[in-house]
Every structure is written in C-alpha cells, then in structure tokens.
Length: 233
Image (tube, rainbow, N blue to C red; front, side):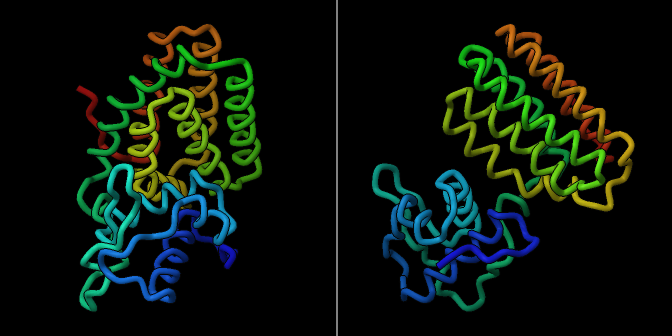
C-alpha cells in the first residue's frame, strides 16, 4: 500500500493510511501495531514521517505508545462516537501558547545544535533555507512553509534530543496551519530567509548563545508576520 498523492501534508496522509490499515487488518484495542520500520516499508514513507504520524495518532487517543514495547491500539479506536478528525494536542493549545513554547524550546534547541553541527549539517540547513527563498520568489507558499518547518526540524535533529524532535513534530499542524495561503503579508516572508541566515551563521561558528538569540528573534517575528499576538515575556 502506497501513500496517496494529494494536497494534504504527508503526515496527514499517513495518519489516514495507518488508520485505514488498522481497520482493514482488524486490529482491536490492545493489539500491537506493526513496527515503524514495517509501516514505513508498507506505506512507502520515511521512518521519521511515520514516527510523526504515530505520535499524532497517540495525540488523537487512537493508540498508546509503551516504552521499549511499541504502539498499541487504544480503547477509543473502536468507539463509533469517537471523533477521529480532531487531534488532542492541536485542540488543546492555542497558537499563542505554541509560539511561547517555541520561544522557550527552540531557543534552547539551537544552543544544543551549535555543539554538534558539522559542516555537512550547515550545508543541509543552507540548502533548505535557499529552497525556501526560491519557493517564496515563485509564490509557492506551501512549499516555502514545508522548507521552513523542515529546517526547524533539522536543527532539532542536529541537537540530538529525540524528545525535543518529537515535541516539535507534534505542534507542526498548528504552525503549518498559520502559514497556509492566503498568506497575510507575502512580502514579509523573505524576512524569514534572512532570519534563518543569522541563525545558520551563528551555528557555523558554534556560537550557541548568538544562535539562541537569533532563533528567539525569528520566532517573535514569525508570530508577528502570522498575526499571532505573541508575548515573549
């Protein structure tokens, strides 16, 4: 079974594919899901994206994840009245709360990344930033958004803390929703490219303090561009 090609974010597609797989294979509450490696092979997706989809399913209350054991079908999966279209994490927290979380979490994350970033890592981040710039110039705002978030996820991966990567993956739907067309001020999107550049220059010097300042500035500016009334202090 392959991931369907449509305009929904890849993770959203995978969530639906995994839910369908659970139903088609007759999984019941308490049953164990296939390992993420197997899911990735069956769905034709990357393991990081499958992991993000599994985390979203957990947030929806459809599965539970047990350390060192895997993912299991939750009791709510077979309830007809269950709302399978929502997502607990997204419903529970506001955009303001998420930007405040980003301000605190990603400022620290980029400091960790500064300790570990290799030249290859910096090159990868620069390629993502350049791809975002090109997408903005061509008015491909959805592609620009994907590159933007991919850059932030890559920084989290470089930092080497899996729990941080998972948390950032959890709030992705809220962030990407605020950045979907119609973009409120498309002329300001180029600012994000410039702000990313300041972060990357600090990372290349392994200057974690400056990188953290640049990241927090970027997140405050991002909230301003998206008209989210963010308060950082």
